[in-house]
Length: 381
Image (cartoon, rainbow, N blue to C red):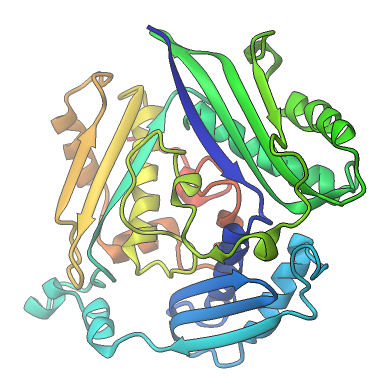
């Protein structure tokens, strides 16, 4: 029996993604100066106003958060307070505290290190569960629906910034529904694109341009047929956007950031968090492990769950599911993983080089499937 699965993506100008981008830009600036900075930075965007809050503990004292906020808004392409937000006129409020000393001490010195002088390891910055996933549907070893949705969103930004469709504005969303049969991907069933635009553009022209210059340049022709459905700005005009059209918040697009709902998701968001926060670092490591299990032909599909306790270095659990596609036993795969990798926060941070200012590159169009990120590297297991 055939089935449909849908994933969505958003552009970098979506108000939630704007907040993610601000938070990750702040994180990078601190890491450039002090790689041991502890950051949990949240951003809120609303009408004519940006609020930056959270906890920052760092030796870097010269970071100008307000300037970062205004530069990011400008970079994304906003500039009109009447239809989205103006980086020069908006209010910027910064309300930052430091990491709790109770938490900091347990992260600096894990439970294991406190109990043994022979162990040196950071403790996890929080408790939680994290998931990683990979499958052989695409060259990125990601599910097809989320990869296509991201490519559509990225293409919307490209045609706007390169002035191929200069009437577009930064806010936008995409959605792709893929039809599967028992053998895998069959076709693309439905495509949804909603994009902010200048008030004077004719909607018929916009819909024609989006289909020709966005959709048809991204979606493989062989996946489209006469029954594929297209919904381009289905509500009509989309002039008011960004933080004026809807509030934004860091960490509110966690399914967009990961696997588009195709795999399970842990409880934490990524953006604005330094790598001692296992919400981020362990999710990246879980993706690395899952991807390499698939890339090494040990399974066609793999999902990994890892869990941590605050202040404890070693993971509490490691769970692996290959959905009946493994060529060796799942127990044997887990033994390979445990023998080869240090899954403590320190081990993950060192292996993936996570103290570098790399996080702006992760914010938009998914944290996975980008070959320039260390957790996307393929090795021999």
